[in-house]
Image (tube, rainbow over all chains, first blue to last red):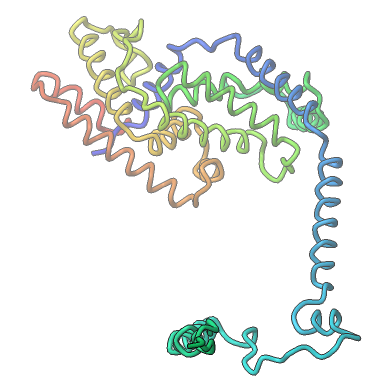
Length: 136
Length: 212
């Protein structure tokens, strides 16, 4: 058995006829359209927004490109030390080390310094009193 | 329904739409007046709440106004409009959680367009007829919005399965299966509601059989 189509159709028509279509819908829609149009007028137009956005993007790209041209690292050292006497070259160039190797190198350096006795133990300060001869 | 169809030739409607696309507010108002009753009744039948239906109409036509420039006359304007209305109705229905309480209709007890409407109605039959309608109305009200949408488009607006498929954005086979499922749900709902044996004999037979 199936539900009769005519009964469903009849009921839907009856239900639809029971409600009155409101008259003020267009007024509400019109008001909202006016509000949307007014808000759209206050916003900068699309062309202007596109121009400002593209200008900003161009400046940012130029900045990034300029940063890429700046010399860094050894090249920067070469440029800044031209014409100067050769600097002292550390047998271990810390800049060439990885982070882990650098930490190991620093630890080793500290350990070596800690193993050395303090200066006052190895070379006591001469007071000068030892060489003074007291006359009898 | 014949009385719900807009009385406008396709050429005139195309002209109206083109004027809307060029930003003519008067043309848009004419388009609104042409379809507002259809959209309102459709959304009322889906949401079963007049205030929700009013909101749906407003949101639907606002969307139409905003996006009518994209309408390319590949389908009928009505299908395109109903597609927006269907989405809005279901969205609004789910958002507001419309209660399923049914307001009594003023002419609920009057016999109306039934197959046996030619003969003189007895008071008992009138009462039974009213009860039948209540059962069916509750059953329709208990359908989920997706199935109710298909039922309304099919039985109230009398669109073809292909048109409904365009409106709800699915294949025609899905429309057929949803209609079949909706009929099953209606039948189950009515059977469940029929707790009174005195109504069962007449109402169930009358409402669950196809007309000859």
